[in-house]
Image (cartoon, rainbow, N blue to C red; front, side, top):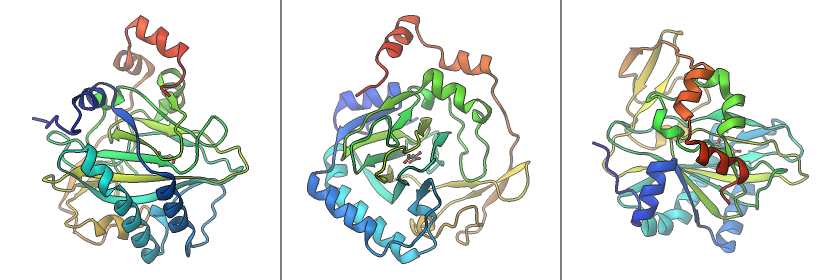
Length: 288
Ligand SMILES: O=C(O)CCC(=O)C(=O)O
């Protein structure tokens, strides 16, 4: 049974359950400027000419500082809005100025046993976002049909249809600086390239229920299996190296895994909306 009391406010529980995401006001101007300073202070030089996440930097001390600062700034927010959730890992998501940096449609990694718990992603831009500077988009209701094992190198069953789904069912959110998109980690999302002359820095913070054990899946060996881990501490995420083999804890189990790709018919069936809702969605191109 999935615990449904995630937010203190009942209407937010209903919206999250129905759409897979909610948007709330979050950071003050002062907090935005504190976090901007944290981002810039002693930042390793890691330009990749598009999108980058500080999660994948090699400088562990920088990642630790970033994580501590983000969690520190969100403690009050989490206390005010959520019931028994804890933040486990925060990092910056950056779209370089005039870079390509499109983020294709995806759902985030699995962090908990999703047959019992809901884990949440927070995404917070530090500047106002729009169609030119790397705004984020979500696919409403996609959390209802997601696969439970997601992680590095595990192919999404939607992968071949990313562009189709984003175009037909995606909704852009023109979030203002400091606004918080909170989404079920199963919710499909994507973001646009940053065509503007200003770097777009956003925060991603992972939150899980207090009593949920952490889990991690990754494809490490071959095309037929994925490896299952139970991270014993949140240091696991700080230490993580992009596509590397996690050092701790040891792999608990290799699970047989066959790629499954949905076709357009499956997808349309799964995402099918009531025609009136579909028509309204196409008129209001954004929830903001
Ligand atoms: O920051 C972005 O543009 C994309 C963010 C994203 O996809 C994520 O946080 O998982």
